[in-house]
Length: 228
Image (cartoon, rainbow, N blue to C red):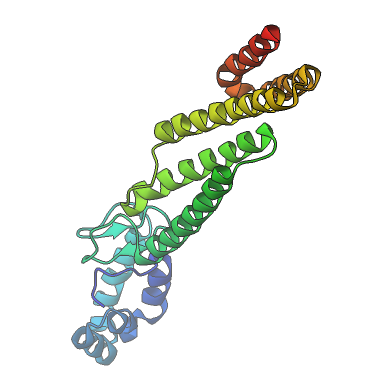
């Protein structure tokens, strides 16, 4: 500890005012020589105590937000950062953010696996796409703080999700067509395609931000229906 370390200026003023004649404020700062001298001379016959009290009083009104020389603060919690750390975060906050990043990454991977397995309803895809987008946003925010590279950029993820959705709709249409060729049941095919169209319209209503993706799929199912 040295005379530049943190002491509450208000507390230091009261310590200096009430106990400064005995050199307590110097002992706190580990200025033991001055502390002993003040103790046996009652603050240099009161003169040193008086000067130190005035200085402590003035220190209370100095802006505590002014950065001290060679001092950095964690931008997350405000704690002092060790001089040896090459980061704008303290070790505690960085460790906490790394753990949070790992948790989000695990969740991201789990949802990706669920999407890859496929969902019986198209709304299931879109709900999971929303979750993935949220995870990526959080990962990117944390990545900037802890200096790591997230597994996906949001633009790349959106393109991959769009492809997956189009593939799911196209597969539903293809399976319905193949089934009708085997069973020769055009009425059943029409019913399945109409159901798919209604499902897509519901998706467009519930997920308006995906309207540009869903609208061409609705047109595709209607076009297929008109060919039957």
